[in-house]
Length: 425
Image (cartoon, rainbow, N blue to C red; front, side, top):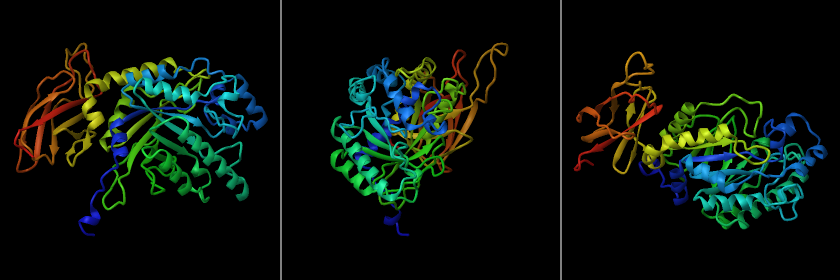
C-alpha cells in the first residue's frame, strides 16, 4: 500500500474537541431507579408492562438538581455528562410531545428533566450528551415482526428529532441497543443523516456492546465504544475518516442504582483506568446511578471529588496529551502535549522511615525507548521537584530516575514532565 493510502486522516474539529474533554460522567437514571436493582430490572424480573408503567406515578425526581450534578462533575475534572434520556424500558426523561405518555411530564415529577439537565450543564460549563436507547421493551423491538419494527423505527426517529431540535446545541448522541436485533435494517442512514442536518457538531456514538468492543459499524460514527473494557490503540492508517474511542464503565456492577451492590471499584483503580484510557487517546466515561429521587449517592460523590483532586495537577497531559511512539517498561507510558512529554509512572513507593512506610513498588531509573530529542529538564508535576536523567540520543534511549512519593502522599499514578532543549525538533 502506498504512503498516501496509509496516511492517518485528520480528525474533524468536533472529534478533536471531544478527545480533549477526556473524562465524562455517565448517568443511568429512570423509573427503574425506584426499585434499586439496576436498569434491567423490568426485563430480568419479567415485570408486566401494565405493572411497570405504574412506576411513573411515584417518580418524583424530588432531589434532582441538574446544576449541582454538573458542579460535581466539574469538581471531578469531567468535561461532559451523558444522561439516559430514554433507556430500554421506554421511559423518557424528556417531553415526548405526544409520542408517548410514558415520560417525565406525565410522571409524578411533572417536569421535562432533560430541559433541566441541559440548563444545569450549561450553567457549569459542562457539555450535555444524550444517551438514547434503540432497544425498547414496551415495543418489543427486539422480537416484533418486520411491520411493527418499521413503525418502531418511525417512533425512534421522531423521538431523536425532538432531542435534536428542542434543547439547543448538544455535545452528542449515544445510542445503545442495535445489538438486540443484529440482522435488522436499523435505517441508520436516515437517523444519522437527520442528526448531521440538525446537530452538525454532535458526536455520534452507537454502543457495540460487551461482545464487539471497538467496532465502528457505520461511516458516520465518530467514536467507538469499549463497554467495561480497557480500550486499545486504534489503527487509523488508510481509514476513510478519523474515529476516536471511549471507554464506559460502572463504579460497581450496575449502571442503574443497585442499593445492595457493594462491589465498588477503588479510587486508585478508577484513576489507573482513566490513565489507561488516555494512554491510547480514548475518553473515559464513568457511570453513576442516581437514587430514585435523582441524587448522586454520597460514596460516588466523594470518589468523584477525589479523582478531581488527582486530575488537578495533571490537567495538561490528561486533557491535551497525545500518544507518542515511545516504549516504556510495564504499565508506564508517555503522552505528548505542547512540545513536552509526560511520563506516567505506576507502582512507585512512598519514601519514609521503614517503621511507618509500606513499600508499594519501586522507585529508581525507568527507561524510555524511542526518544531522540535532547532532554533539558524533568520534574514531577505534583510538587515540581526535579528528576535526574541520562540519555543516549543516537540510540534513542533515555532513563529518568524516579523518586518515591513524599511521605503523606500517594498519587497512584505519578506524572513527570519532560522538557526538551529549545533547538530540538
